[in-house]
Length: 309
Image (cartoon, rainbow, N blue to C red; front, side, top):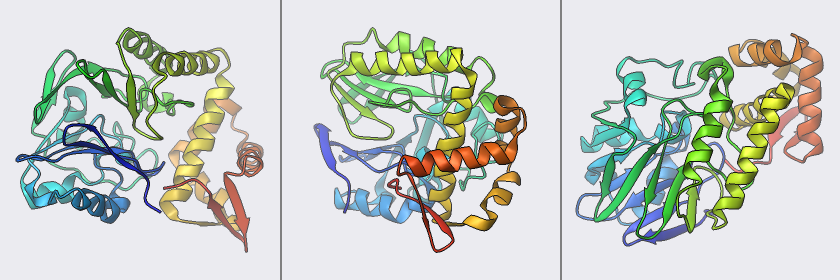
């Protein structure tokens, strides 16, 4: 069953997806605009949802990406090839795309499927962005992603918070790519946006929500806890990226999944960094924890996740 679509401002629609695919937005006007385009493997569904709103991908004039991670830029190449549209990212993300840096974007680090595209515009903190008749203020919010931004519409007090702010959880912090200051930059970003007057939040994953200040407080506590106890940060990476890996694959053979993860850079480095290189014990604790939470299902020798893609 499709997840909800809602009109958040006149002719600007929020499309809720899942965890593999980030939420995205469609402006339905004479010059259509997309904000984020989900995951490459989910593009058939992304296209269907866009068309249901009466927008032909070939007519899109602009794509704005909140950052360059695979679950937010996945449809860019397909849409740009059809439409010749402009694409705008934060200037750091533009540099990643222009230089074909598939490590800084996380694609290579987490073995993700993504395509480069032509990034034609650079956004920076303090810019104003027109989406049809709606003007958004650009706030640079590094931490989860070094090129992360949120978009704020002050008249209606609407925040497109991307992966900077979710309602009840926080996006993964990847110190091995973003550096050891990533959690501190995340705290600074959250502290900065908490000063905004926000009534409605539309996150990068999950449902829209209204209790902005309490969500910021929860997020800052979570990040603070991970700064105080680095193993919490490690568990968060392991659990979330294991689930993401299963979503990308669809399923995995249980007997070989440990060896599959051992071939990845991210798994070995995460265990080295937070758990003293104890790969097998850490793997089993991760899988048991996911099973206990009902996030992981074992069936007929295969592993599945119950999380919506």
